[in-house]
Image (cartoon, rainbow, N blue to C red; front, side, top):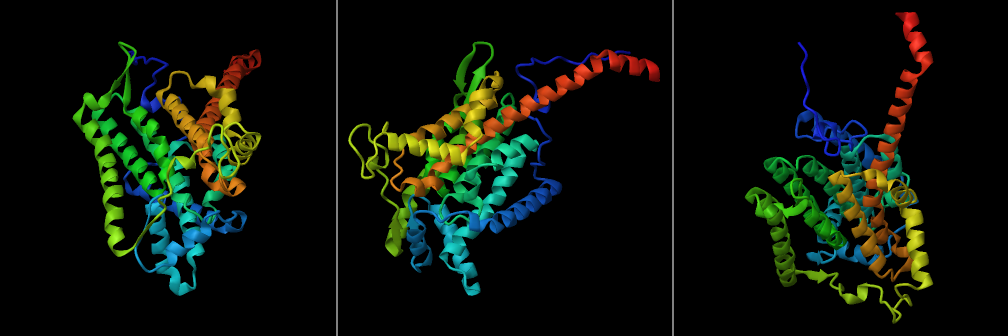
Length: 389
C-alpha cells in the first residue's frame, strides 16, 4: 500500500521543514533538558566572555555611571533603568569582595553575553551562522565591557529568536499569540535595559502584521484575534506605565538622571552640531564606515551579496526590517564622543549579522546538497552501485 504524503508550497514550507533551519535548533523549551542545556551554555559563555575583559575598552560614560552605581540613594537612570539597577545590585552583592562599580558593570556585560549565546543557538547552530555573529567587534560589548549596552543587545537577540518562533506559527493564532507575546516581553525588557531598543518599534509592529495569501494584503492580526492583541499590547502598556510612574516615585526618595533625550541627539542636516558633524559631512560618513568595518565586518557585505536569496520567507523579510531599523537610527544619531561611542553604535551589527548568518548558512547548505546530488548522479557513482549490486 502506497501512502501519498501531502505536498506543501515550497515558498511557504511548514515549520518543521523551514528553509531557515540550516542547523539543528537549540532545545528552546521549558523542559528540564532544554533548561539544563541553556544553563550550561549561559554559564560557559558568561565565563568565556569574562576572561576576554582586557580586550574591551571602557565605555565613554563609564565614569558617570560609576557614580550612580555607588551612591546609596535610589537612582532611576532614564536611558537605561534596568541595566543601572542590575549594576547597583551586583555592586552591593560583591562589594565585600573588594569589587568596585566598574567590576559590577563588567560582570553584567559578561552575564548578558551568556544570554546572547543562548539566543544565538536558539536561532541556529550552523557553524557559518555562529561565525558571522561572533567574528565581529560587536561581541566586545559582552567581554566585560564597562557600560550599559550588554543587556539591551542580548535581549534584542532574544527578541529576534522568539520572533522567529512566532513567524513559524503565524497560521495558528493561539501559538502565534504565545510566541508573539513572549517576543513583545523581550522587546519591552530590552527597552527597559536601554532606550536605544525603542528604535526597533517598527519591527515589533511588523511582527503583528499578517500577509493574507488569498488577497496578498497585509492585515493587522490585533483586529482579528483578541489573544494576539492582548499578547502584544499588554506588555507595551505595562512598559509605558513603568517609565511614567517609576521616575515620579524615585524623585521623592532618590535621584532621576539620564534625561538628556531630545532632538539634539540627532545629527543635523546642515548646521554643525556640538561635535562639528552634519548628516552628510565627510567626518560623519567616515565614522559610519568605521563602525560597520569594526562592528559587523561580514554582516552588511553578506546581506548585500546574498539578500536576493531571502525569497518570500516572512522571517527573512522581517529581519530586513530589523536591519533597516538599526541602520536608520545609527545613521541619524549623533556620535558626540566619536570613536568612544563605538559601543552605542555597535548595535547595528546584531540584526545584520543574524540575517547574514542565516543567508550564508542556507547558501552553504544548498551548495552542499547540490554537490552531493551531482556525485550521486555521476556515471562513476552508477558504476560503483552496479559493482556493489
